[in-house]
Length: 158
Image (tube, rainbow, N blue to C red; front, side, top):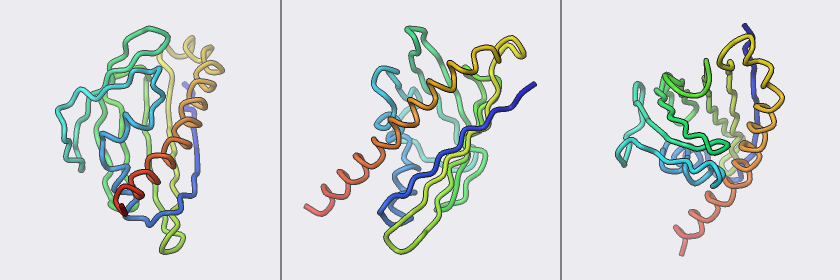
């Protein structure tokens, strides 16, 4: 049974608390997910995020509707939080979000996802396709994060 790891790092030229606040608002997940996934939060908004918070989503991948339920399994503001899939498309999905203050105006954001594919070991044959899709989603997310964070900062200063 294989566990795969996806790791991403992104330097964001904003203070740690501002970056953490953005990521601890579940509504922003919709904003940084590619539109073609039709990502939608099903849990009534606003969501108060903390240890034990449950969040339900719906998305569509290759025209297949997917329901996803996660639980916040680690909560250490403003430095890290972790969401773990309770039900969804993966056999395992544990996503650690870590934030490190590099200086007063720069934050290092790290994503570390530990995942296993369904229907092991047969499901592992789909790994190249899954990796390609995850890379595309996280590439989009990286660009989108900067767009939304900088736009919200400009709105706040106007």
